[in-house]
Image 1 (cartoon, rainbow, N blue to C red):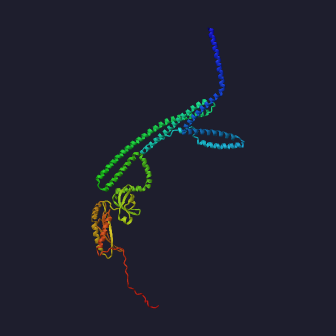
Image 2 (image 1 turned 60 degrees about the horizontal axis):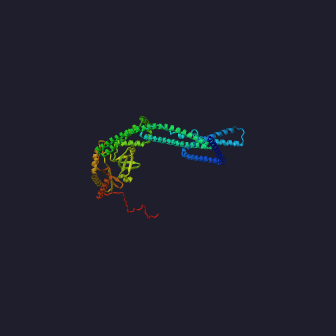
Image 3 (image 1 turned 90 degrees about the horizontal axis):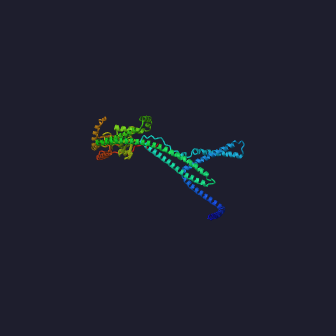
Length: 550
């Protein structure tokens, strides 16, 4: 039994050995035939995988190229390094050629060309001197934070707010650049990983230099990012401190402005109540207008002083400056100061009031009108139709602005000063020499008495009031009739008192009445420029005999 088993095992071993030998022989035969094809297939797969990685690198490079600020800055930095290296090589070559005592013609030409090239590269280095010191030096440097502005008045509030907005915008822009750099570093890391995979396939090390350049670029970008992170943190803290200080100053100014506003409002309210009081208890329009003007002037002056002394830091310093500048200001603004002084004379002296009828001689013209307003710098007059407008100006209704300084330099006549509301006006009519001039004077006197009686009585009362202020000697208010010899007759001048605001109306009525009265009398003839011709018909005998023969 044992022998049978051993025999079976021996046969099995022989058969297995034969089968294995056949398989090894077949395998050896296949490798020889297809070894070349297998190698080609592997090379194809390797090239294909490298190509796929290169496509991925191309896609990433396209994304990196979008970050133009960083890529351009780095490219400029590399360019500056290349230019510097080239310049060093050129200097060495120039030094070598200059040491040679005897130079060939080609060497001399080369030396001249290198010297010219050295100048060009030196100028480029000068332009790129900031680029080769450190990459991204300008980009990673944060904006300069100015010193805290001094906020001492409401206008500085806008300056402080504008500064905060500007600094916030600069900080946000800096953070945006930092975020862009972070994304760029992420893309570069992806490229480095791809280059590592390529390195496992790149048996010829064709991409080793590119991988090394990318690694250096990544290191420089990471260094820049670390600098920006630290700088951004410090910049943010400085910005927060500045904003706190500026906001505190703005808050102080707003509170101060609110207090001043309350004070100004109270002053306005007090003067408003004062105006109501004046309006209630002063019935005269002229006095009310003047009181209202004075109250407004005091109100505005008081508000200006309140604001002035709240926002000036050193009053004595300002007084000193104004003291030195007063002479120049007085010369430059002489007319303004004189107008203000004239306003004080008008208001305090009371020579002219709103509503008065005045005449102003200005620019060779005479203007007669009513005063509508007296401001700090000028008087405003509404020109009326008067005898001056008819005989001289031939126009009326204009608004005339008269500077207040004219009270010192020009003729200003007030027709309605103080309580006087009447003026003397006259009508003259010329009658012939053979007319009854005494009768004509009597008729004219009766007519002007009839029509001016009311104004005569009013003037008599007004003059009695003026005796307390002025020395009045001639207070005769009755109409006056005068006769004068003229070249063409006797002029009968009738003078009477009339309303200062309506002289032409009464003048027209009296003129018509006198003409009618004179025409109704047979012994009164109204004269006008005439000439009489005396013709003599008698002939005088000649002083010699015309029949005498000589």
